[in-house]
Image (cartoon, rainbow, N blue to C red):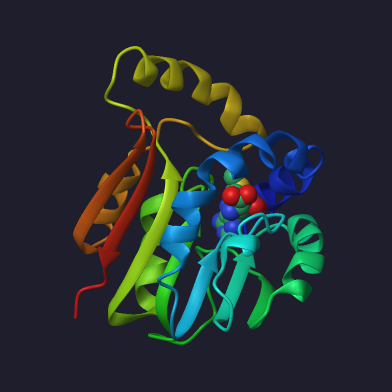
Length: 202
Ligand SMILES: C[S@@+](CC[C@H](N)C(=O)[O-])C[C@H]1O[C@@H](n2cnc3c(N)ncnc32)[C@H](O)[C@@H]1O
């Protein structure tokens, strides 16, 4: 477990729902609902945070939702208890998963790979626990190729990474580098917010 990252996100819990809960969740709700509607089989969700995404999970699924921050998980617990299906919350570091190989049929993420310290190795760890042929579905914000957004995100990242996420990551490239195939990117907003689909090769 990476305790530096754990502490950072434990500290970020204060104000998290206020900052992210209302506007952003309302705005991105249709995209998230659509992405998560494909959940089936054994699903790994990374990282659940305070549980804002749980409202978009379709009922009746079998989901293991992990996060590195116990404080985030404590906020997620009441929402998880309301979920109409099997939803287990687990305190785990994505770089250090103790699940056997090929445990899960699908992986989903939501504003996750802006935040984990080593995204390519985190994604490789997900490939190990995902069935060969299994899919990953990601709702992520990334850097942008558009001027001036890309430059602004580069300038802001040294500050934001101290308190929370990095704003300028190239997550589609990281997904490819980690060995996923059939990577498909759906632009959501300004080349910054994206839905990414990919497959774990056989
Ligand atoms: C920006 S928040 C997103 C949370 C939630 N998905 C949402 O959209 O509100 C990023 C989350 O990643 C978690 N995280 C960061 N590094 C992690 C790691 N190495 N393993 C598991 N979770 C991690 C943080 O604790 C935090 O809850």
